[in-house]
Amino acid sequence: MSAPLVVSIPHQLGREEAMRRLKVGLTRAASSIPVLKVDEERWEDNRMIFRVRAMGQAASGHIDVADDHVRLEVTLPWLLQRFAEVAQAAIRHRGNLLLTKRS
Image 1 (tube, rainbow, N blue to C red):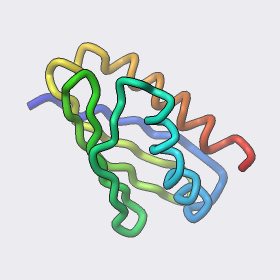
Image 2: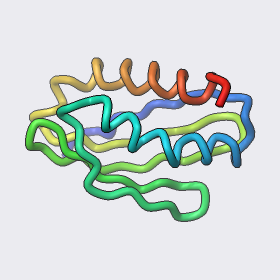
Image 3: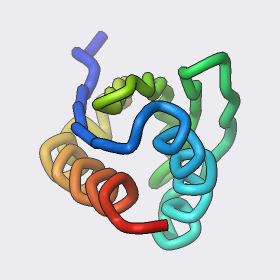
Image 4: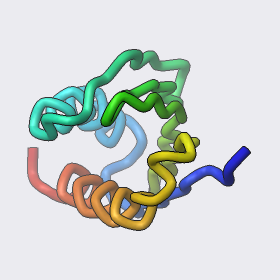
């Protein structure tokens, strides 16, 4: 099994505001990326558990929301491992926009 892809994004919003933004953010992000489909998204306290599909491949993971950072961990299937660096940069970029932009 491959190592998970981990992205940590600092923020200054506090846990509640970061969670509020993330609750609408994943669906919005998926709608702007045609190859990404959200199969599952559920919240357990400050953790979002998700399963997404891209290029016919499923990936699952979770996002932990803390007072000062968000930590995403996702396990990619072997076919998507080739895109791990690109995915990590894209996740970090979109996460920063979501967590720093005024909403």
